[in-house]
Length: 188
Image (cartoon, rainbow, N blue to C red):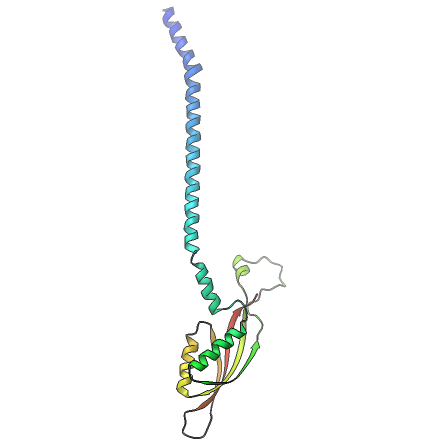
């Protein structure tokens, strides 16, 4: 019986001294492996999300170019006049005179207030306007063609006023047009 008791005590000591520490070490290794795997999985998911965002916003440069064509980042007076002149000539009208006036930027940020601005206000640029006064001669059908081209032009133009006067007292369909046109740009 003593031998049995000694064997039980020896088995208990082997369990306490050898098996339990080995089991705890194995559990620690398993825990470290699981936490590393979890870390790698989270990092992989984050990388996939970033790649998805990059793919989503890859085409945004094209959108920015389109917006810049419609709403230039500067006054681009030469470009506006060239577009108007091209539209007038494409419509078989004869340009007579151009004049330009620049207006103060709209939606300008209020610098008098010391409050924090919302993030969308920081990104929003004020809109400046150019008023172009154009005089040209042509037929009424040519004017309709010009207005159609102006409406579908890449740059935004708004007709503010239009004055029509006959050029001669004959039966010719020839008129003198005086038009005020507004165009916009992003001011800095």
